[in-house]
Every structure is written in structure tokens, then in C-alpha cells.
Image 1 (cartoon, rainbow, N blue to C red):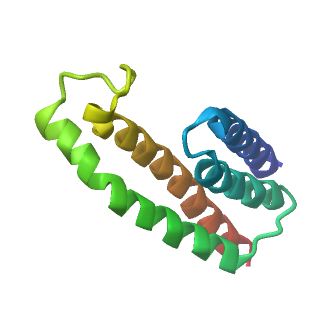
Image 2: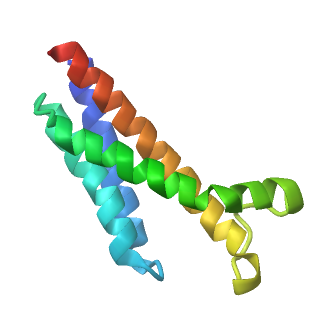
Length: 122
């Protein structure tokens, strides 16, 4: 029962994340990414784990993290005095890309959780 509640909360959070991305400059990508996590988490409420869906999520989100990780390192090494909640500009793309990378890390953690939950049930 606790797992169902946790999956319901996670599905709701990712739905909210997707909704917040509607005003993003590239909403289609981020609504799809967070929406996919919401759908997989919603299905997990009913113990409907599809291994291929979880695997696709892990691969895609890991790829996104690896793609955006140089911006996180740039921020940490060269701009750590700049807060990630400060305003964005074209000169400071590392802020937006670092935020996106951390969002993908949270999403990847969700998929790893689903992976182990599915293994436990089988």
C-alpha cells in the first residue's frame, strides 16, 4: 500500500513538472520527458511495470544527463558564485542546462526506483 501511495505522489509530481514546462522555450521536449515519467509512475500504482518502458527511460535520461553534464561542471568550476535560481540569459546557458540536468537526475532516480520495484515484484 505504501508503494502505491509513493507512486501516486511521484506520478502527481511529474505531472506537475510537465505542466510547469508548458511555458518553457522548448516545451515539447520537457513535457514529453516529464510526462513519460508521470505515465510510468502512474502505471506503477497498479503494479503494471513494463520493463521496456523502464529501460527506455533509463537510457534516455542517462543520455540527457551525459549531454548536459558539461554545463554542470562549467557552473561548478567557473561560476559557483552564481545561483541556479538567478535569471537566465544567452550568456549564461550553464544555468538553464544545469537545472535541466538536475531535473533529469531526479527523473532517472525515479526510473531506477521503478526498475528495482519491478524486480522485487517478479
